[in-house]
Image 1 (cartoon, rainbow, N blue to C red):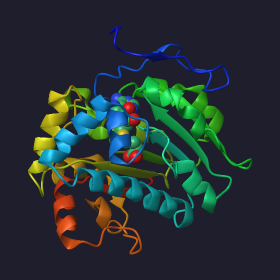
Image 2 (cartoon, rainbow, N blue to C red):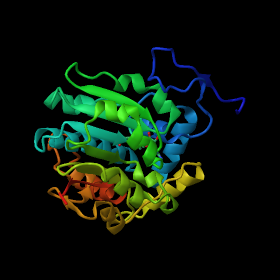
Image 3 (cartoon, protein in one colour):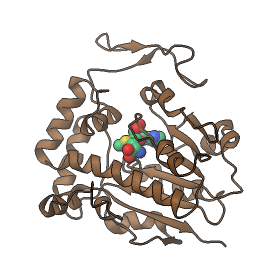
Image 4 (cartoon, helix red, strand yellow):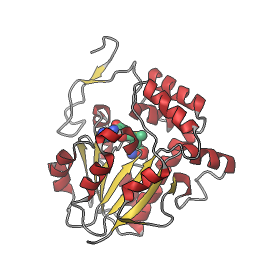
Length: 291
Ligand SMILES: C[S@@+](CC[C@H](N)C(=O)[O-])C[C@H]1O[C@@H](n2cnc3c(N)ncnc32)[C@H](O)[C@@H]1O
């Protein structure tokens, strides 16, 4: 461990049973979840995270707006899934630090009996996970410390099966996480394997960065990589590939701020819109067709 780094040990009742002890915070290195927290205006970040994020912002000034719009998209899409599609079960992979409203808070406002399994591979997210375990009495939440690339661990985890009934529809949420996977990780195969056991009526909800509209997104992604955070843009067509064989819910694959925008909160600035489209994630949500 770097002597400059800091460790924290969660209190016994401060995290799920899988909690790592003595987590190395690596405060002098930029960290993706903390950089995202900084972009969202959060407090769980350190100077190295802020410096790296500010460097990315210097080449792509709409980055903070993009992060906020991504989070707002997730909230609108989850609300849609609970209120309009009747979804009561969510598997959220790449959860990130708790950020109000968290997914379960959004969907349990509509359906108090909704159940959410959160998953992230980051030990720092695990340390903060207690804030995700605040389910309504009628519903349930669980946190699973697992890597998206280890589908077997996710699909066989007791946390998953004790919380969700995989014979009933599930929304698989992969919001702003797939761009951390390289082609060598086989992201398409991983998504397919996660969807395979889900029954008809299930949904896929995802967002992903693209440089299709604004090449500055690629420049920002390069800054992330130079800072040691592996992140990859994909084209619209490549992102659409995650939905192969699925039926897209209207309006389909679009920039996050264009997916059923809320006129009271979604950015209305057309210049920002255009810039944001460039950098921002494409997202969509889709129904799995019955075989
Ligand atoms: C940009 S944050 C997105 C958080 C949240 N989904 C949102 O959109 O607000 C990306 C999260 O994905 C997690 N992540 C990255 N690679 C992952 C992997 N291979 N397995 C699981 N989680 C991963 C990171 O730790 C981070 O918390």
